[in-house]
Image (cartoon, rainbow, N blue to C red; front, side, top):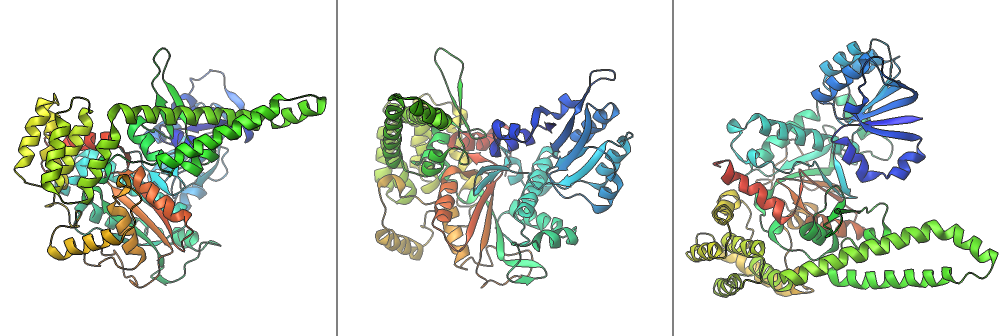
Length: 576
């Protein structure tokens, strides 16, 4: 029998990939955090349990481990690190009786300190488990760092907190590559200092232990097609700055998962529904354990409504069949299928509740009107008409203040430095929006205006790009006005897979073959990704392309969390 010991980060990581039922099926009868595993000398021990520690290699965890080893709670311990462990340290720890699993690379001194603390030789084994990321979807991961806004400052002005965020990104991306068994080409956005720094650190970290990389890269089924200096030319990690596309996080989206996050909020694959008379209700979502969610997470709201209708009809049909029990044999069959039927009943109730709540929010905030205007501003240049429509909407008290603010932000990004922006700011204040929120109109241009962006986000930097964009827009089959916009990330992925990324804009940290066909592409966004971008990649992978794409970021933003991050530039008086 086992006890699973986690820390503050590995606890939600584990909850994202495995259910409590599955944990029990693996003979784990106790799950607790590492601080709870420390007991006073003389207290009752749980000697019949084997302690399995799955933790990050942080100094805090090391101190807790050392304290726990003074008077061990469990009969044996296994330590699982979430990253690479030096071979010599593994030898030093051999022969003990505790297993500890760390999620990332472990500093040599940390292992020495741990070995010194194990006076009773309880450590059974130390294992490397590269799981230092939060897996959201099959092709989307996060590091759960809500804000890295400090990293947009010049490197010499970073604080200790900024350094910690940066180190966590390095560790997370490194662990993700080892989990994928990839030693990839590293390409990065040259115009972004933080992208350049992350690429350089990652390049160096991948080469600290050549034996480790060779071992992981050469395992059966994960071999390279073509290599230059052991770097897999068919695998690429592309590091991008969120500031290249500030538009996507501001838009209302119309696919299930993206809508849930924007309107209700998804936290570690759980949606919290506010209840009037009772405590808030947590609704779990999992693309692994919920077949309906996996099927419709990228579906439009219209397709979702049809799917819900069919799902409810299927449930009612099965309910009718199960209610007509006329013999012992019928009862026996019902008992056999009851667990599946009960799970379906709960699932139907869950998704009907969620879609009903989404529908209520859409109607209450009149989001069809708002979203249509958002999409038009994001995709088309028509300043006079856009200004007129925003003015009308701002003067209508029925619209949500946050929606009004986002429309003005989109206008300010597209028509930067236009005189009409001042009029819109004045009207925002007249609507009762706080001054610090109105100041976001200027701040977002400082954060991600045309001076900061290297890409032609709105396809309007010159006459050629304008003409090219209008021609391709006419040729493109757009299903409806709510799905016109495509993120900059999707454009980058298309360019990368077609070998069209410019070396001058996205150089590599090592020699590479620009004509090599990419089989595996990891895109890491510094500054936060969105579920809409995750949807674009998920849909691409479901088509069965020869290439597999994975999206990662420090955080998965909604428009609220994105603006909260930018607002720190105002509150902390950060000058970029």
